[in-house]
Amino acid sequence: MTAIRGAFALALTCFSATTALAEDFPGSRQIMMMMPYAAGGPGDVITRIAAAGMSKVLGGQIVVENIGGAGGTIGTAKVAASAPDGHSLLVMHFGHAANTALYPNLRYDAIKDFEPIGIIAESPMAFVAKKDFPANNLKEFVAHVKANKDKLSYGFAGIGSASHLCGLLFFDAIGTNVTSVPYKGTGPALADLIGGQFDFMCDQTLNVGQAVKAGSLKAYAVTTKQRLEAFPELPTASEAGLPGFEITVWFAMYAPKGTPKPIVDKLSKALQQALLDPDVKNRFAGSGAQTVSQERATPAALQAFLKSEIDKWVPIIKKAGVTAQ
Ligand code: MLT
Image 1 (cartoon, rainbow, N blue to C red):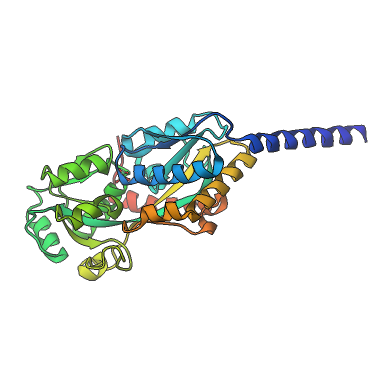
Image 2 (cartoon, rainbow, N blue to C red):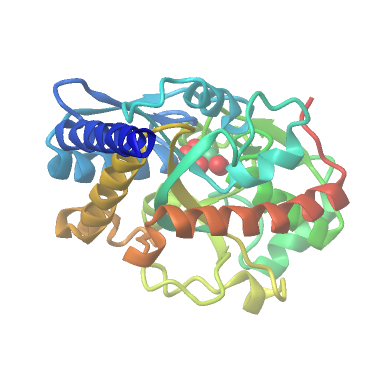
């Protein structure tokens, strides 16, 4: 009987210790939120919106760190190896699923080395080109790419990026490939596309939308099932000549494996509250990107969705025969 009482007392002590830990969290220490793509890109924008919204709820300071390169795997590996105390978080898009098949020597397991916090936002994409690209609709764009494949170049943010995965599906759909120009994020890639340094890209409307509206880029189609309210004049790729073509980027938040559950729950509740914040929603207005429902901003929903996305992308990548060195 004494042993049971002792075990119960120990369990109670541990429970009350982690609960107290969560109540005090984050305390005076700042939270580092990793965005493993370059500053100024769509991932960085989404991360900073989430950080600002959660900081209002948690009361602590959240600092965004950008470590680009290798399809986001460098920054992701840093978080996987960080102390599981709630002060190191990762925001990453569906490349977290695809990279399991693209990078043979990953220094982490996409599922086992992380605690899911929740999904943040969905971010549609569009096919865009430099403003003097000689095509005025998607059909002409595809025909020109196929006829000039040896002269054209495609900008992207490295193997495993959303701009890479959209390109993978696109070049497979049209049976052609062109020279690709890698960047550490589509923020810096956008500046070069506007400058005509390369010819076209598939990127998130959150990033390229303003340049399209300003006439600095040509846009041919969005990659969503339905047209976007923010860009009603743009047809979907499916209606404009690429039947069934669809890809939407999703961003989610993770903590290192072993982060105490009361802290994971507190972070997830802060994310959910941030997604309801009118200031957060307003910052997405007009971009095409949007925050997800409360049900999806939970650890369980993210864990299930991540597993389904790994199951989806692995065969696509194996069929394409692509791996990063
Ligand atoms: C970015 O934030 O730069 C983009 O998410 C890069 C990409 O994945 O295409």
